[in-house]
Image (cartoon, rainbow, N blue to C red):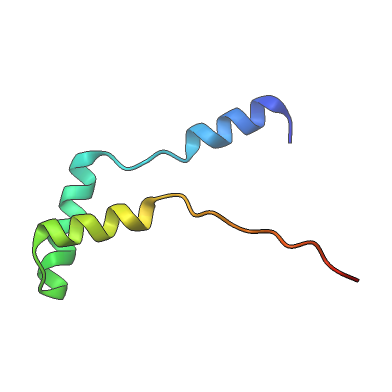
Length: 59
């Protein structure tokens, strides 16, 4: 993948806006039966980048 393609790929993956997160949290809170703030916290934690540990093969 070239340099410009990588830049476009990074731009395509954007974080959802605050309004979208609040709407999703309100919906999720109604469905599950928790508060909107708790749902918002869960959604924010789910959107955080994950760290991966890569092990070298010992073969």
